[in-house]
Image (cartoon, rainbow, N blue to C red):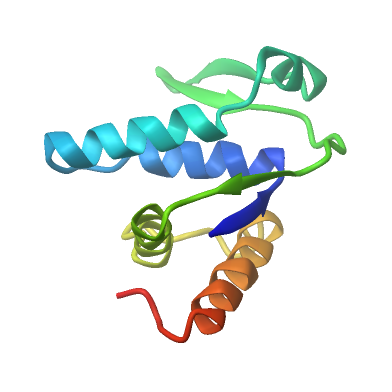
Length: 121
């Protein structure tokens, strides 16, 4: 399964994966996926990516600059895990700020699910 991801989607998915809890096998899967979608040093520089401290906690921040999206291929199992992670994200999403990156991602996920004739559970 192929997803076209922009830098904001990649950074947010990376953060969601980093917040997952699970078995050692789950953690290793998310590490592999994080490594695959991680921004290169050049991409980070292009958007002025940085880690800042907010209320004693580290937080990633970057500037919204147009960076061409990239295509990433996932196995069926990896895709299913990504869909499950996004659609079942317990803390929830912020309606306004998450819409910019989340809505186009959900459209891709829904399209690929329907194209393959099933919903990922």
